[in-house]
Image 1 (cartoon, rainbow, N blue to C red):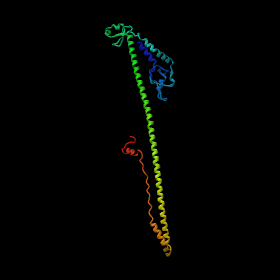
Image 2 (tube, helix red, strand yellow):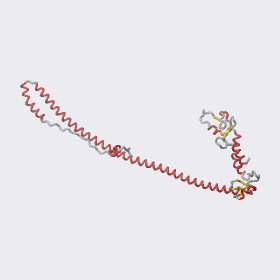
Image 3 (cartoon, rainbow, N blue to C red):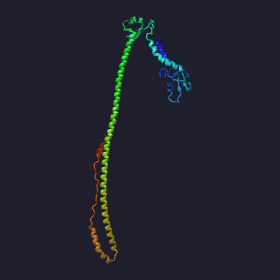
Length: 296
């Protein structure tokens, strides 16, 4: 088996099939399969659910979870050893056909070659370079690519920072404008409150004066009604007197009656309340009559 395949096979035995990473606090269940304890417990969505093995679907009871310290230690060693094993395989690969070390690399076919493969007719016209040279070139390209990507990442990080600043500025502008609007409308509210107070005070004063005039009218009319009632009462009494006495009182009654007939009807007052123009009322009514919402 190729050394690289062997290294990958070792990794497969030390890898959790759920998270696909090296085992962390592994447990081995009754069916023989092993998993990271955290990964296995995450397979149970609710505490009441039955836990089943992700490999064979067998039922797993809580008492079946056995910590595997040996597998944990092997996973730690394998994780630390794998980079060194992979690095050591460079120069150890051998040609399956000739059994010689593969020291060269064909760029056209993208395959490693040994001395015998390099001299073969199918590779004579190809660009064949030492494997180490090609690896260095590849490493330089990868490093250059990494540098370019890093610079691009920085540009995007700067762009993201710029967007964040714009967001913060937008929030600040919103806050400032909101308070400015609230302040301006507060002044309008105060102006309207003051105007309302003055209007209501004026209406109250005009209403008080009008009611006073009406009361004066009522007193005057009431007094005349009392005079008429008094005169009618006196006439009623005179009608029941003896003829001579009735004739003697008749002259005074006629004179007083003449005076009452000469009384003028009091002029009835009709107090009116003045109307003031209410700020913005006309505009608001026009908005409603046009079917528009206020503020549109």
